[in-house]
Amino acid sequence: MGGDCCGPPEPQTKVPLWKYLGLLLLMCGGGLPMLLPMLDTMSANLGVLWADLTAQTAFGAKGYVELYPDSPELGAVFFSGQPWLVLCNRAKVSVPAGWIPIAEHLAATDTPDAFNMATLDCRLKLPSGKSVYERFNLTPPDNYSPHALLAYNGRAPKLIENAWALGDSKPYGVANFVTGLTAKTRFTFPAMTSMALLEAKCLKMKACGVVLHEEKMTAEEESEIMLPLLKQYARTIRWVKLDVSRMALSVEQSLPQDDSGKPRLLVFKRRRGAGGGDDTQLTARAYKGQFDAAEMSPFLEGLLKDDASSWTVLKQTPNIVKRTDFNTKLYADPKKTPKLEL
Image 1 (spheres, rainbow, N blue to C red):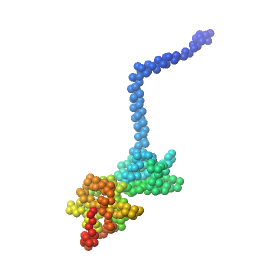
Image 2: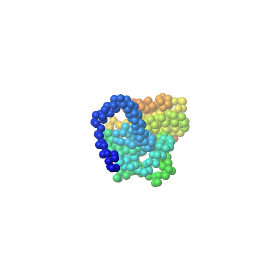
Image 3: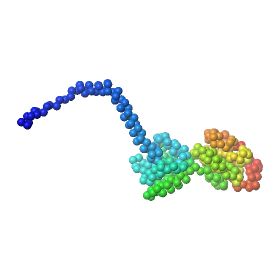
Image 4: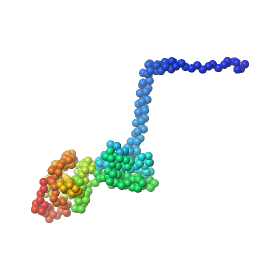
């Protein structure tokens, strides 16, 4: 009896297909206006979520930027003159353990003039068809053991092996590494106190700006006038300064005379000789305006673009010696040092 009390189970009735179609039409018709705002909200939320996710891989979050052969930032990395430490890291290979603490330290602290960090597979071909190694004539270490490229102040990048070998990466080790590398890559403005220095730091360079000043330059002249020029032309011009109250320059009688006591600017540039090959000519041009960064910048831009006819070819290498009455008179003698059109 118990089995008969409820009767046999009722058969399950399938929902007709037309009812599904009707529900779909209802949604696409009257229900659609209600669904659209919901979809828009979901899309916006997903967009915010995606932005949050991608922000985690940004330069500021990681402390370093991931570069690729077609990255538009590559030009700035290797040619802007700004300091960059680029880890030559292979794809799908974890960065060295010491690399992360350095990046985190830079991201978390306000380090003046700090260097930038990036990763790049230096073996891959650039748009030019050459790898970074080939482009800068560098030889990677055996088995591509961890190494980096250091580019700064307009110099060609140098290969550094185990630059982040900091042992257990204790904070003091990381801080010392960052401090040391920051000091190394800071913009330099050396004083010329000998002919050997002038040759090595200036006259052998492709282009060199010599700031001639009397006694010590003021803080304003150093920071507000020269520092912007150093940063702007770090790649194209090497910069030095010469205290003409202590040192005599052989071509000083050819410089524009100025009684204001403000520094003066003389630019040297090496050009290929008429015969071609590796022979170069040393040429010079003098700035005749006010000692002001905004005015000197167009002058420098013009010099870098001008043809050889706008430069004076120097038949003799300029010389500097300790200033004495004898040397001052010697360099002022047109028979000894003819005046040039600079």
